Length: 474
Image (cartoon, rainbow, N blue to C red; front, top):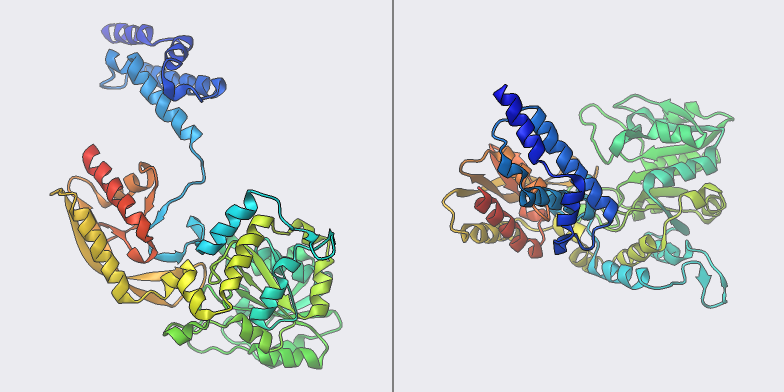
């Protein structure tokens, strides 16, 4: 009976919606908040409190129903709704091209171009020299051809779109021959066979998972064959008893039978990483020089630009692709083109590209530089003066990510952080959920780990402030 009376007393102490709204309007924080959003926030908070009272939640007292306490909860709830869902985070994972965290960072010149073109009109589809309607694909075509050696080029929304568009144009209703060992699955469970099905082309698998020979392709060619497709296994590797057909050999076979040859490079790069001591990754220039009729790859992986699917190849084929009605559905906007053009321009000078494109800069950063940054961040965190904070330096690998160079480990010097009274999971959760700018790391050996390879210089003070808040809140 006493418990029932207690519940009733708490329910009577719970203020009404209108009263809370009236009190909220006396708080300057709520001045810009729309009435519908404020009302929704108040109702949700009061509903949660009512449920807690009826459930007999332990420790719930009349002070928890005070107006200031309720307004604080409404303020927090409304504040979350007002803040953007898409927000900047600090990538401390050591994965450079992190798909979940937005893949590549844009170079400064690309960001500047985005601001300039995003805040004004542009010649997106206007030929300034002739004063007539132009083509958005012409904006980056000459630059792509200059860098790659291709005859023609265009860009669409992403590489899956590029592959879909090429297959639909060149092989709809006909067969495409591809090695069984190259039927890759890319991020988000999208698979090459699925993309091919959507294009209206029919898949003809040849060879085995680990070994495919030139005669496998040749024996599969028939009247209904429209295309020979080679897919770069950028996100995995087959080792041991293996055999595959080179692009050059496939091109020669295609010419013998008058069939076009397409290569999907997946990540795609204009830089030969083997020249920097890393694993060899085929370059776009090499694919074009091998004679491929059409080559596709991503713009936001190893290239280090915005999300885009890039198509380069023979002029005759590209003209067909450009006329496909699907092109309009897959086209990219002015902001993507602005960022892509600025990024591509850097590749005219490889040294400049490596120095200015964040993705390349992070991948190729020497170990000594990473170690120096790790020690600097360690000193910054130790300057907080907390005995609860324990930091050790750990030799752990970074990864390229984005489905590129899957076997390549990048030696790194990481910070392994422990906070007395908190588990590694609790620290990770606080950094991810509670920080205004989330700091994303990983857990190794029961420590919250941050890898300086993917942390920008300007983000280090921010990390320090987040740890300061964590320590203050206990």
